[in-house]
Image (tube, rainbow, N blue to C red; front, side, top):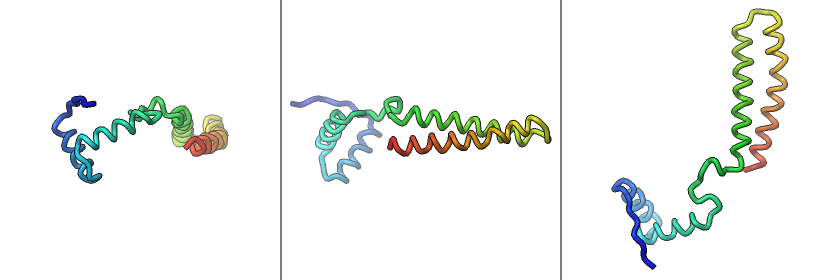
Length: 107
């Protein structure tokens, strides 16, 4: 079968370069790439479909907590606020290692 696909000049240039590197015509490259994408689990590489996304978001939250604790430490004189921030650091570090391990296992 034959179909028509439209590309911008910049897209055709990029596709043409890659096709030449693979020693394919543009049509051959596009057809092969489209079939490979259609057969993959996530053909468009959508980040919301990445199974690691919740883990990365959890790591981002932990990093935010760590930044908040460090900011509190920098801005606090000796006292209860500083002691509370210091007490949080080991817990945040432990959660960071847990999330990092989870991300690594998911890859």
